[in-house]
Image (tube, rainbow over all chains, first blue to last red; front, side, top):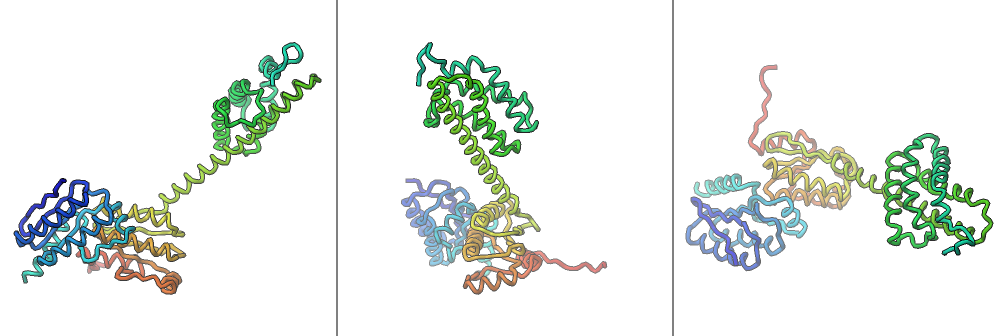
Length: 122
Length: 283
């Protein structure tokens, strides 16, 4: 089973999904991420799915689950780089990812998290 | 359907022996029919090919026209009627040019009073009828192809995605919105969002005269999909009648921003982008 790497950039965690996700790797990613957030005390999680071409309802729910996990550690989640086909599929599946922030690309995603982080400190 | 040698002439042999005068005569008849819209040289080239493909199957009565021995003939006829359609000939004219061969061959065998020959002629007539119908079928198929191509082009033409500002796209929708079109709009818009890295899109429906629940559903899906990708959609230019319909149908636009005009929508998008538009003092 391939594991998805989790990179730490400052106070942010970057999860860049470059592989075809299996249900097992999704579960492993959720566990790894929970441990990593708790270990690093990160205030934001960015999930980059610009390389993901195929999604199913399980992966769709993963975003909401990860957002829920992060929220427990007081961290915000941003999903970036979703492809049009993936967006259409998720809408057709009826998954609107309530509670998950989205951004067009990594740069904008980091900007959003930066703004959120500032709001929290003050 | 074989004819005893010596007793009577075989129709195939007869046609092969007098191929040249037959084709000449045939071209003459059809050229008169088309009143000079097709030159004799063109017709002759086509008919020569047709004749060559026809000769091996003259003995057939046209009931098994789907069979493998007809492959060449079918391919030729399809190509022939295709070129005829594009050149603007009516299906009657195309079919008649096939049927004309009948008369020419009848003239050739007029003198024969052999019952065998008569039977062969009957079968041949049936074959030509089937071939004529085949040209008609090809005609209909080519027409449908043309219509399909055009409606696809129309889809492409009528849904432009334009960039109105750095980070702001606009899709002016004009005409009737059906599910197929909204689907195309949705895909084009989402792709344009990625390509241009725009965070705002304005869907202007000033030119749309009717919205039903399905169309509204598609619009909503587009907005939600754009939101999933990290972009915001603004719907503008809803006509008064359409606004009434939407409310009457009970369609909920939820937290989707709707504005009265494209200008309002643009102003809203610019404000969200952090752009301030001010009138200059120099007037």
